[in-house]
Amino acid sequence: MKIFVYESLCAGEFSSDENSQELSASLAVEGKAMLAGVVSDLLEISSSARFSTIEVCCLWSDNVSPPEVLTNERVHLKRVSSPSEVSAHFQSFCQEAEITLVIAPEINQRLGELCNIAEALSGYVLNCSSSAIALCSDKQALNDELQRWGIRCVPTVSEDQLRTLSGQCVIKPRFGAGSDGIEICSADELRIREIDRSQTVIQSFMRGRAVSVAALFGSEGQILMSLPVAEQHLSQDGTLSYLGGRVPAESTSLVHAASVQFERLLHQIAEQISGLRGFVGVDCLLLDDDPVPVVVEINPRLTTSYVGYRALLANNLMDVLLRDQSECPEPCVDAVEFSSSGECEIIQAVKDSQE
Image (tube, rainbow, N blue to C red; front, side, top):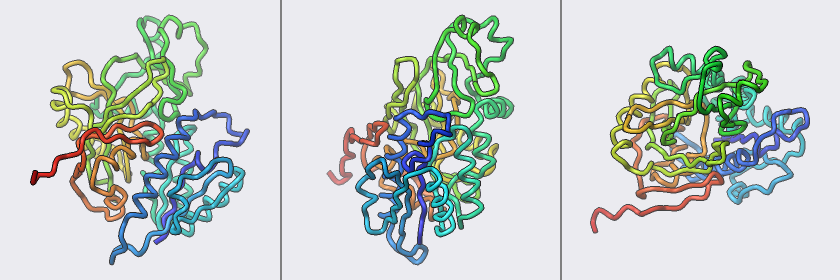
């Protein structure tokens, strides 16, 4: 079985001068870590009556050295040197593969565009539907829907509210990804700046514990596996840059009390958003002594926490998705600290039950 795993930054898709969106180096590093993790997991899946031997196709930029896993004999690696070459081979691999998985940021709605192409050409796409991606990629539209559904979220600030607002605000691209383009500034400063509100979302700055929760969704939008709550490590320089995290989040009375709320949140999202499929992550805040999570955004794609989860669990997450069957997470260590570049540190091994 041939599976095409495409990571847009590693392929050099955004290197063209025609693309005005500058991507931070951190997104490229995170993309490389996710791609390497996914390919490693796919290569570990044994042949069975359901799956023939898995072969993986990847595109990789000539300007960057590929990770060692891409030198495996079952990986068909195509080196590319220009965006036009990337586009041509992307379509070719989609047609050849039985399954396609796209790893890309939502910036300028590019993730949705790529998945649209893959849906038209590939046998099966291991991503959310184009409509689900479109909603989750639009931070303003998603915020409006979350409020309509009664799901607690960080409220956006309207023009009228900004006139009387005090304190700090968060400015973020409406169609951005991760922490790229995010800025914290005072409401006073914001009032004298010229901002394109059609492309920008402004929110009140809320202090809380940054966490995320994720789930694997099946072909019919069903939850195959709810993953443990993850701690997010963010920079304190006003950009909220993503530095990595810890899975599971360090246990406190608040996290313990919130565990049921997180499970409820995932099921609410599954009920309200049709077309969820594959790995989906939800960034949240936990406020002081309040177990109800505040949704910051929904990531309709693989996130960097995948590298932490694959180190934490005995389960092969790609195998769960391919089999399309529910499975309980089985930790094989107590916790994992991971960086945005994919480096993992085991906090403490789980003791053998027979000891």
